[in-house]
Image (cartoon, rainbow, N blue to C red):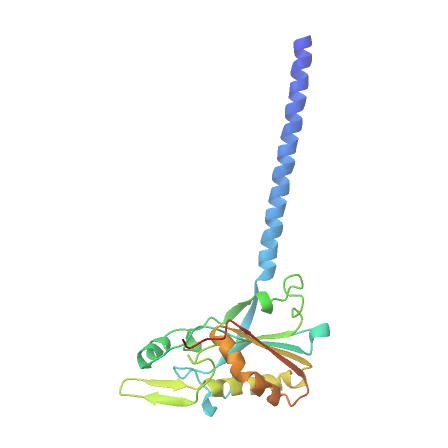
Length: 228
């Protein structure tokens, strides 16, 4: 009889241990699903906008394709805030490297993805991007190979290369002014690497284009290069 009581006690302990394991597994699965849900929520994809009429004004990528950007509209208290982010991606330094670049997404909007994931400073999640999540957020696609500068065309017997970064900048800003940028109260211009360099070059111009009606700040991330 004592042996039976001992067995019953052991079975009860085993059942209790099994319950703990099951609860732990369920909790782990729940956490995994929650993490997966966060990842899904994080993947805000924004469609590309090709600037209409830009090519007729000479605002074109290296290969002659039109410039483009991605815009996610702001809302609520952030409806008059604008964050413009230059896409980075290095430079081309001579005819050969620029001709090669023109055949990639770094030199042609024809080869770019039409949807871009907005994350980090472009995210629409308050927990991840508390300062700008509800602002109008714009990603300027980089396709001129020269940090959104330049205004010249190179031709030889085998190729034509358009170095029209300045015109691309002008065309995109002109388009955005029509879409609400002209009524902005706060504007942040930013960019990383080659985009950070573009931020230095265009900061003052953006303030001029807005006519002093908005507070304009500029943030260059890894955009300062020393010629040593």
